[in-house]
Image 1 (spheres, rainbow, N blue to C red):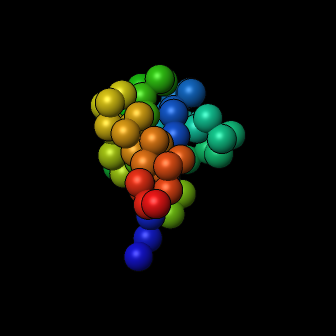
Image 2 (image 1 turned 60 degrees about the vertical axis):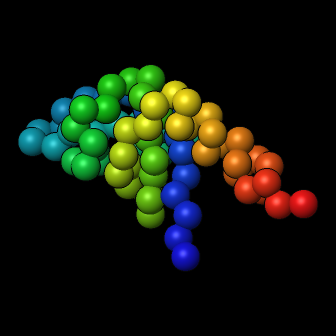
Length: 73
C-alpha cells in the first residue's frame, strides 16, 4: 500500500511548456496533474508528484490522521 503525503505549494512557474512548482519541503515538482494549483494550495503528493489539490479542511484532516497515527490506540 502506498500512502500519499500532504504539502503546501509555495511557488509555481512555467519552465518552457511545463508548469513546475516548489513544495514546502523544498522539492521542485511538475504540476502537470494539478494545473489549477496556485501558491498556497495544499496538494496530495504521491511518489513525488502532486496528484490532487486539497481543501484546507481535507489537508488538515489528513495531516491530523498522520500525526495521530490514524487514530490507532
